[in-house]
Every structure is written in structure tokens, then in C-alpha cells.
Length: 488
Image: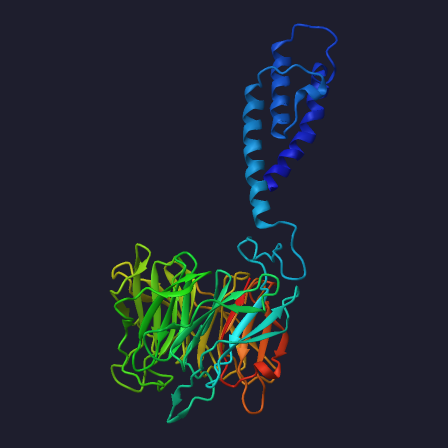
């Protein structure tokens, strides 16, 4: 649209000059007169410009000679650019933004591009061992939260074991226990070995309607779910005694349908059900940015010789996830956890033993990752979750044991900002970034309730600030809560 506006501006300047230089162009012809070559060219140039605006030179009482070369080319280019730019703006919904989260012009990021629209709702699961549920929260035009709905999944949550006792925080030891995709929410039921699918209500995104039946995950203790809109496929990671990855087609009408007649893709990590962790457990399953690989991060155990963490990669071939796996343990990493896509060949993975690492696909070993840079984080205890913000093109990471959010530049691993929060939360787990905001879940404990910290990052890199510490209503509170995802 900017090019079209520039063209209009050029016309407003050029038209008076043409009229002044060539009076015959602007005055009605009283009788036929021979036109000079100069006049014919000027008239043709003007007609080309008028044609670009959809006007006709007959409106000015003139005959329509063939446009001159200059006018013809300018008219063609302007018309093409205007149509193309106006079509793009219409598709983007320019001018339709409102305070209720409709599409609008977002905050500019450091690359000069426009940020994505803000979220309309965010979701996490209670992961209650008796009755799992999805907690939906509405997002206002200012990015802040209000209560929405609690929707039962029909399955049960699960709690892993830690040092011989049930894990009190992060009981699934994972990222992305719930995921939004193509107008739907997918959630794992660790205690039922199932995956649930819900449709998001367009009028009120906090309202969910179940689609089809829960899908058997073909393994035990599912902890993380991935989704590819390109493939319309969901894949779930099972972290128990029967560990592995299973995939499903996603249909708005029929729900989830298994794509694995041969069973899940085994990972064989020598675990129990429920798993003992967090070391030695599955962390996160996700598709890379272009959906050419299905990745799963698995934590190592630094206390045990030879038990290194790794990234499992299954290539996507002809629209299907292969059963041929490649593993890599990037140098310097140990307890790989949550991951954020940076580009088609690069991810930023948290590592609970020191902070985070930027990893890139090897140019020599197919589907294996190598270390690009490390990000040691001071005063960290268990940096485990990551999300890339579209407003800043940086990755935000959280720590279950420290109440801070760290912003990382994935290109070189440098720390942009370490935001220490004073809201009283014990720490944060999973998080989601949408538009100019980041939403981080604090599941709470016996002293503190379940809360979601809302960070405004619309000011660009290094400008993150907390604008809300939202306390979840009683029916959505759970010390075992997991996951965080946003619907835009």
C-alpha cells in the first residue's frame, strides 16, 4: 500500500505540471487540430497515470491516443503494485484491529517488521491425577488476562517421581503438555495414556468443544505434544516405561486418527511409569520450523557416566514422519529441556545444568545438531522452558526455582536482559509468546496459588516488564499444573 500511496503523491505533483506545460491536455478540444509529437507524448503519459488509478481521460474531454512509453510503463507498474499491495493489506485485515484481540498493526520489532497480533486466549492444564482439565483465560486488548473457563479433558493427569516421592512442581518434567493449532487445543492426559482434542470457539476462545474421542498414545505417560499446521498432524511423546513418539492426523470433524499402524517410534530411554526424574526423562517434542523434522529432547543425567542427553530427529518424508531416527548430543550440553525454534535449521534449547544453548543442524552429519553458542545464566537453578517472541526475535527462558525471566539473543547466545520479578511467585515453568506479550505459568505451592505472569515486550529487545501477575480462579488452581499455549 505504501508504494500505491507514493504513486498517488507523484501524480498530484506531476498532473499540475503537465497541465501547465501542455494546456491542450487540460482544455476541452473545440475543434480538431493537429497535435505536435510533444503534445501526443504528454497526453499519453497522463493517460497512463490516470489508467493506474482506474480513471478515464474522457472525463477530461480528451481523445484517447495510445499511451506514450513513459505513461504506459508507469501505468502498468503502478496498477500492478497498487493491486498487489492493496490485496495484501486487505488479507492482513488492515484497520480492523480492536481491543478484543482482533488483528491489528503490532509493535515494530528490531528488524523493522510488524509483530504478530496479540493473543485472544491462553491455556494450560491442571494435570490433576483424578480429573485433568484445560484452564482457558481470556486476553484483553491490553494483553492482560481475565478468567475464562475450565474444561474437563475426560482423562487423568499424572505425576512423576523425584527422589522417591511425587514431584511437587513440574510433575511431567516437560514443555508443551498443551498445544494450540489450526483453531484447536490438544492436551496430554499422562495418567490415562491419551491425547484430547478440542475446538476453540471463534466468538469466545475461552470456550472449548471436544472433537472425537481421546486417542491412545500407544505408550505410557504422555508428557508433550507437537503440532504442524502444514502437515495437519499432531505427535505426542510418551515418557514412561513404554517411551516413544506417536503421530495422528487432525481433523476438525473426526478428531485424531493414528498414523502409526506399526506402533509408536520407540525411544527406549529405560524409564518407569510414572517416570523418575527429572534427569533421564523426555522433555519436549516439536516440529522444526519448516516441519521437515520431528524433534524430541531427552535429558541426560550428569551424575551417571555415559548417560548423556540427546536430541532425537525423525525426518518428515512425503508428508509422513519417518521411523528412521538420528540422535545427537551436542558438545557441552547435558540436561536438554524445553526448546524454541529460531529458524528452519536452528533451535535454542534450555539446559537445566547451566542455562541455554543455541544449536544448529550439522552441515556434515545429516539431521544431527551441533553447538553454536552457550548461554550460562547466573543464579539459575533449573532453566527449563523457552519461547521465541515474534515482537523481539529473542527467546525468553524461565526457571522453576528462580523467579526471573531471561531474554536471550539466539544468534550468539548473549543475554539481552535478566528480569528479576518481585511478585512473590516461587518460580515459573512453561511459557508462551504472542504478539507483544509473554505469558509464564507459576503452578504455585502450598503457600502460593497458581498464577500467570504477563510480560509486555512490545517495547523491543531489553524492554520486557511485568504488567500483570494474574491469580487463577479457585477451580483452575492446581500445584500440578503444566503447559502454556496461546491462541492468536
